[in-house]
Length: 260
Ligand code: F6R
Image (cartoon, rainbow, N blue to C red; front, side, top):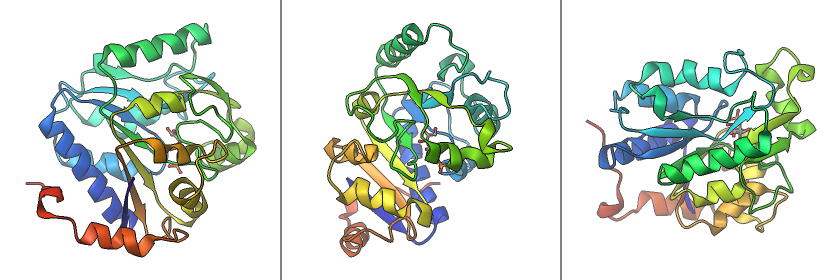
């Protein structure tokens, strides 16, 4: 795991944007895994501002609320259209998101997994983290080998996400989410976390034991993970001085190229 601690969410997001921009330049037909929620919002704004060529890119989103149609204002499909898809030249045929209205859920989820494999697998998966450590909507005690499936949201997640809905009562109880095994199959993962509310989950994910009680901790077993944090989200890390030193003293060949 590479832990990149920056003073602010803005700075940390700039690093994440550079990583994605570099990938799209090196591999114009890259397959990107995308997330929704507060954490990647600024990332999407920065990527839009870079005017990258998305014409050959394929995307797969992590998750969707079950029961919400794509045009529902709180659906993740609507979120992605609003905050990214409508502002870049991504081919709509290359966009993949779990369908919250899927009828035969097991068959649908198996098809989603098949689509990821048929696209050649995910080159880089963007992740946020829940306050209890979920990635995608893989809540604590999710199987670390799980694939795309239905999950039941925890009371904590429904409370955390109530800010996007009028009230907690309106937050769906179920979702479709890529599994932890699906996320672990991505060739690289890029985890974003900002603010004090994420500090405990990040400390567990980065420095705690690998446990399904903090699903993000499984990323310790993945060979290529970058974790972009602001200083608040990093505040409970025991080795933060070391992570900062590593970042400040990277050999030249490991430096991220600056953007034009
Ligand atoms: C969203 C997703 C979730 C969020 C997580 C953090 O697609 O998969 O895991 O990344 O709940 O949400 P925010 O960024 O809103 O704090």
